[in-house]
Image (cartoon, rainbow, N blue to C red; front, side, top):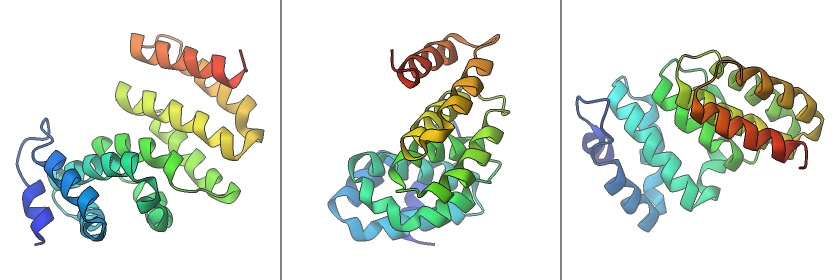
Length: 171
């Protein structure tokens, strides 16, 4: 077990544990990013969740680090663990997707919208809107999808959805 994986361990899925410390380490030493990324393959759900959290935070600061993992992220996106999905949805904009990649991302993001997690729905709507920057032909479809999510939605989903629709429509 790697040093990073050990630090991400724990039992409480409601806690990010030491993932913020891992973020600091990786930002200072980018060579550790590979080790962190490999933690997504752990059998342990807590480690996977915390690794996804740390990766997403590192990528927000250093977006280029995730690009070489684009294909792997698109495969990992099929995972059933909602906490990992939250972070994958937030990383979409940094992957350097091609037009053909957007089709793959679009499919799993649509599946994410069927999840019960309001957090996942909110992040997935944002990621779908981000896909329209790469593939503008999706804009009309994405607007309709987001509008459909607003029916009986939570305040967070309503707020984000309305902002996204406004932006997508250019208002």
